[in-house]
Length: 96
Image 1 (cartoon, rainbow, N blue to C red):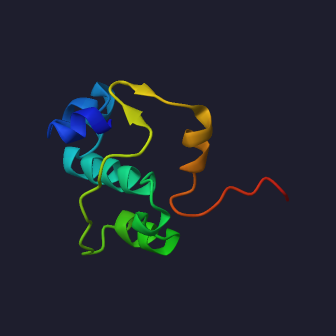
Image 2: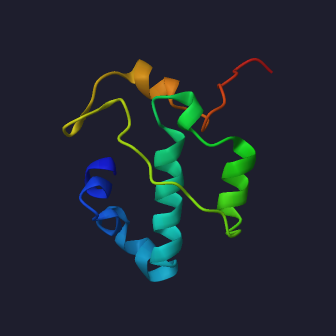
Image 3: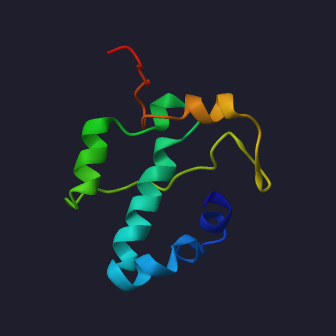
């Protein structure tokens, strides 16, 4: 997703099935929000309340995401780094 986004070709990441059932603009908006949620610096990630506002299509200025830390060409460095990006700025808690 990031590689295409960085080339300004985010629309190419969209599943063809979704192109016929959803707004491309809305899907790109969700992709942008998702990329913000996996920023390396936690301070750069939106809070969950901000994500909810963004997804609610409120007139919120959505910043441009930077390159996620775990992107190396077309591969992911490790699953630990993937896990660290879960939760859009919050930590995953498996305790119930």
